[in-house]
Image 1 (cartoon, one colour):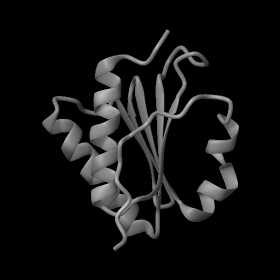
Image 2 (cartoon, rainbow, N blue to C red):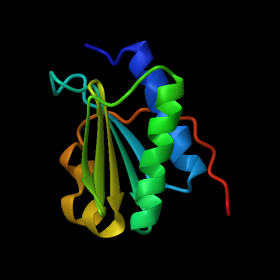
Image 3 (cartoon, one colour):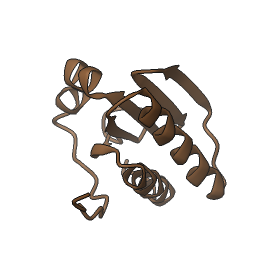
Image 4 (tube, helix red, strand yellow):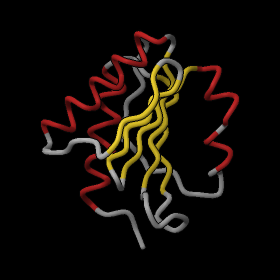
Length: 121
């Protein structure tokens, strides 16, 4: 089953929110052929705990404007997880992103083109 259009739309809204708050290594992984519960994992790295919280707050704000609220929020500090059922956003510190390597764990799944333009800041 392919990722739904609404899930793709929400993923792009969240990815743009993360980019606006200077999140790095933003990757969306299509899990629709692998998992029943989720369709997309959106991964982002933040530099420190205040930035991780700002990333989380911005995603929640933008998705709320789109009519969505998380079914569940977990974590604080170095890893924040926002569960929007079909979309799960993982906001991680560099250390935890490198340690858990979710990118490699789901390496055989396709990536979703987010259409983000890389800007040097």
